[in-house]
Image (cartoon, rainbow, N blue to C red; front, side, top):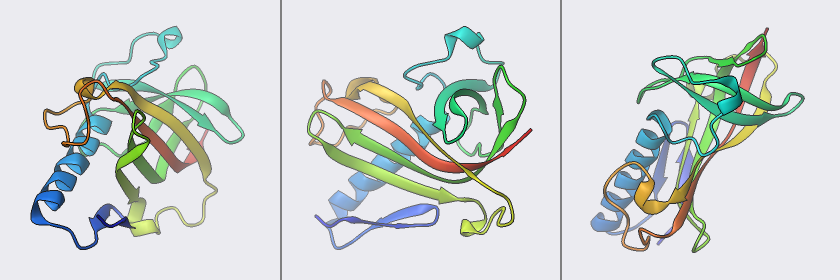
Length: 169
């Protein structure tokens, strides 16, 4: 099996069988759905109270800001600004990589990179690096129904976020 070749907004794979390609497509679709659906956050910010309707709370660690809670829009194509909770400001996403890893076997299952404006969005504004764990738990609890053959339902999987945002007051 070959390594993924990441491009802006998508991931492609080198030479592989049709079945392997279909499984990778399913994994990437699961990755997108998981990132956009409610209830996937491993450590919700309960001190900030529940998220508003249509929103979910995520914990991020950002350079210069430390640990912050951000309220983000739910939905498959949600990519708008995230409101910083319990502080003034919001973050506008610029670039992000989502990575799904089987921690039991130390195997990266899927990785997806997205960028605003094909990497040219907000070119004259300073961006801030942020990271976070969006989901960690048994593979059987990860959104979706099809697990790859190499992943047992009891394996621990983790979905991480590593990206940049323009932070505005």
